[in-house]
Image (cartoon, helix red, strand yellow):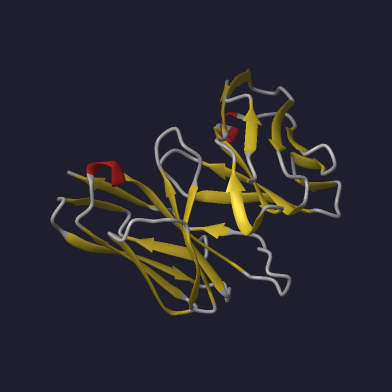
Length: 113
Length: 116
């Protein structure tokens, strides 16, 4: 059974810092990996999707990397802003959970001015 | 505009009530999902519909009953719920691929359910 772990569970940084969120998964036979953002009481917003054949994806200040063989992904946020404060979720599809998305518990990010 | 719309956004119901959650997607996707998000737990997949056919029931109690009349609409009918069913219920859609794997998921804003 696929399991996804996100570290750290919570992170608090001053505005302007570059930061890294980590995601690991137990079954490396994934089809793709997706990073989401969730604001309190709201739904999930897709940030980046990385196919299993890709090593990274970039969108603005966000860069996500994927090392499938080691079962790891990182989300890099450059020059963090207070508006980046949210919960960041990592999810994978494929492997033993074929066709289903398996989520981590998320990293709660707080960027203070 | 997320492309996936859920109503109602908030719902309070008693344990003997019957209510329904509605989801509509405007993205032309062929797969729709119900997820449950409880405090301090990862998102749990409840149901999956591909081309209006239910392809996944993740051991969900029968007091939750999904309905997918067409590829754009998804309902979750609720009856005789328990207080522990209080959670955020999220609908999502994607383009299911020929390989059987899942494309990028797009979520609605969720329906916050409180069972008294």
